[in-house]
Length: 340
Ligand code: KG4
Ligand code: ZN
Image (cartoon, rainbow, N blue to C red; front, side, top):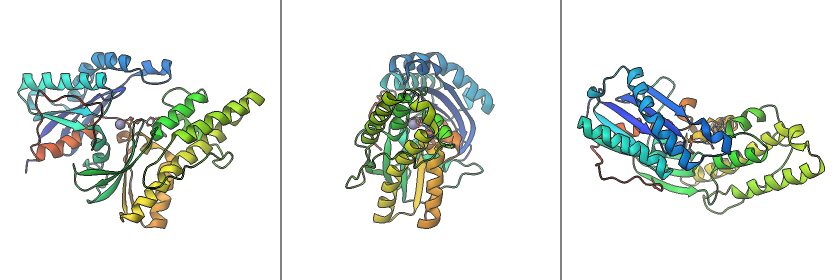
């Protein structure tokens, strides 16, 4: 066992957030994120622009993380970075930076799986965070993934179900774009839905066998519906925006909720652990908390700051890798696709 004084610098650059964090043991000393606003103009992440923005932001954000943690780089124990999954050009910036820094400081490297990080945030030692016991049902809901995972230990994770097409966050963002909302529209839909009626419009919930989900059908149905209505009334979207958002959000959440219930019952698993950007969604959080009562589940929701991409999640996964001495090497490749 290592002591709790190990200092890890963690770097996350898998998509459009350049992030760095410093952890001391399981405690987060700093968690800095430089968001890339450039993508708003394009209605989605442009990979080439994301890589370039990472290059200009990575050094300032690492400096900021070390300064906020009040740590000198020479006191670090190891350097962690996201190995995958993600956009290759974005991942390469983080890994090249982490490798260079590790090489110059003669420190070990810890390559981390981004999706494992989303679930492992529940092991950060911090007020308000309660850790689950193994095994548990992990649910990753983000812009790139929607997965139901049997988590047997920190790094033993088995995917039980996944999306067959779009991820839930992608469905939020694409439907939002059709309504004229800026990228990423998930948080705006959540906000606008607060003043809307979730049962005003009905969209189809796919009935798939097994534990997989699908989001492309509801996206198409939603798009066709607003096109049809807008051709009759060009102000249809603005006049019904709150109800559209509430009804869409209700449907997107019901799709994953139904599968969580099925998996939890079949295995059975009563600890439901949520991770990823869509874990910030208030409808998903509220519905899960309601189920906690009726299903006798224990639901683990991450604090909002650890839902969307951040480097603390990479740092906590790295903490457990360090415990197991699972070090990487300078020849490790970044992987745009990486399973648990
Ligand atoms: O985990 P994340 O930061 O990046 C990926 O790994 O994909 O997730 C980003 C996704 C986006 O699709 C964004 O719209 C969604 O999370 N998101 C939300 C909310 N906050 C972020 N979706 C719905 N409601 C929210 N409150
Ligand atoms: Zn993510």
